[in-house]
Length: 408
Ligand code: 7TS
Image (cartoon, rainbow, N blue to C red; front, side, top):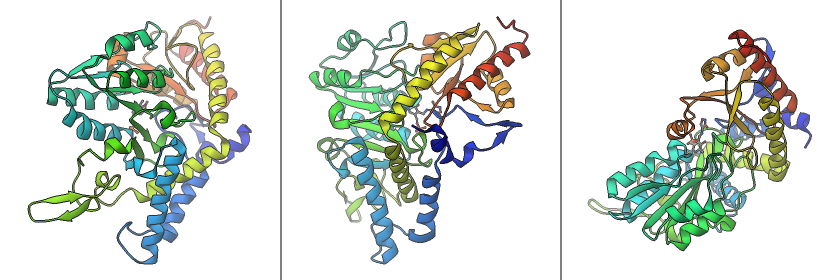
C-alpha cells in the first residue's frame, strides 16, 4: 500500500492545525473522506437528484437507480445473500435500535434472556436494556477476562436455551480487541438465539462476510468507513426481516392505506419510512468502491502494523497504561498517561496539531470495569503513518513535561 498516494485522496489531511501539520488519530469516532466520496455526493446533487421510487421522470429513475445500486453494493461488500437484506439506516445506533424494537420486543417475554457484554458501546447496550425492561426478559452479561477478551467457555456458560438474543460487538471501540464473533454466533444458534453483531468498528477495517459469520443481524455506520455521516445499514436475514413489523410509519413503507387499516411493503422498504437518505447511500457506495480499490486485506494489514508499532512506541513511555490485549487488535490504542486527565492530554496534543479522542467513548460500564473514569484513545486508519505515531509519542512526552512529570 502506497501510503503517500492514499493520503493524496484525502483533502482534509493536508492542512495545518495550530501551526502544525494535522495528525488525525480519531478515525474510530469518524473517518475522513476521500475526494471520490465528496465528488460522488456533489455530482449526485448537481446532476441526478430527485426523490426515489415515485416519479416516472428521468431524474426519478436516476436517483432510484443510484439508491438501489448502493444497496446492491453494500450487500456485495458484506456478502449478503440478496440486496433486500440491506436496510439503510442513519447509522449503527439506528440499526441496533431497529432490531431491539422490532425483533426483541416482540419475541422476548418474561423468563427469556438477552445476552450482551460489558464492552458494548451504549448503542449496543441501552436498546437491549430497554427491551429487557419492556418485556420482562433478563439482561445477562458475558464476563470479560482480565485482559479484556471474551472466552468461549464464558460464552457457553452465559448463553442458555432461554436466550433469545445475543448482541456483541465484532471489534471494541475502546479495547481494540477483535471478538470471536463466528464462534459466539454458533453458540447462540445452538441455543436457539439470534445473533446481532455491532459492526461499527469492524466494517471499516476488515473484510466482513455475514454469511460466513452466519449472524442474523449486522449493523454498520458509513461515516466510520470513509462515507458520509447520516447513512448506515442493517443487514438482516430475509427469513427474519419478513416476519418483523416496521417501527416507523408513513410514506414509502406502505402497500395500501385505508382509513383504519394499512399494509406494508416487502422488506427492505417497510423499514425505510419517509424519503430515504439518498445522497448518503450514494456516498456510501463511493466509499465502498474506494475501500475495495485499495483492498480490505491491505487496509487490515496496514492497520495491524500501525497498531503493533504504536503499542510498542507508547508502552516505552514511562507512565503510559494501555488498555486491552496486545495481540488480535485493530488499529486503535486506548491509554492513560500518569494521572493526567485525558482531556488535558488531548488539549496539549491538539496544540501540536494532533487529534485524539478523550472521554468515556460511550462505554461507561467498560470504564467502570477498567476502573477509570475516562481514557485517551488514538485510532488509526488507512491514511495514518508511523511518523504520525512518532509525533503522538513526542506529544505525550511534551504533555508529561507540561504537567511537571519527569521524562524517564
Ligand atoms: N458501536 C460501536 C462499537 C461504536 O464504536 C460506535 C460509535 C457505535 C456503535 C455507534 O455508531 P453511530 O455511528 O451510530 O454513532 N463509536 C464512537 C466512538 O468510539 N467515538 O465516537 C463514536
